[in-house]
Every structure is written in structure tokens, then in C-alpha cells.
Image (cartoon, rainbow, N blue to C red; front, top):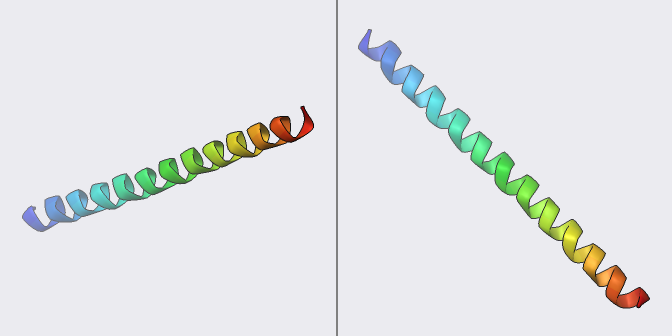
Length: 45
């Protein structure tokens, strides 16, 4: 029972870490795209 609880906690931690990484990645991508758009608009204007 205790081992199962520990494994569940570990899995939850891994999932949370993975989600955080994924979230950071998407946030960085959005930021980059926004920067590229601002660069393009500055270049075109």
C-alpha cells in the first residue's frame, strides 16, 4: 500500500514536471512568434 502510494506520488510528480515543461515550451513558442510578428511589422512599416 505504501509503495503504491509512493509510486503514485512519483507518477504525479513526473506528470506535473512534464506538463510544466510543455507549458513553458508553448509559452516560449508564443513569445517567439509574437517577437517575430513585431519584428516583421517593424520591418514593413
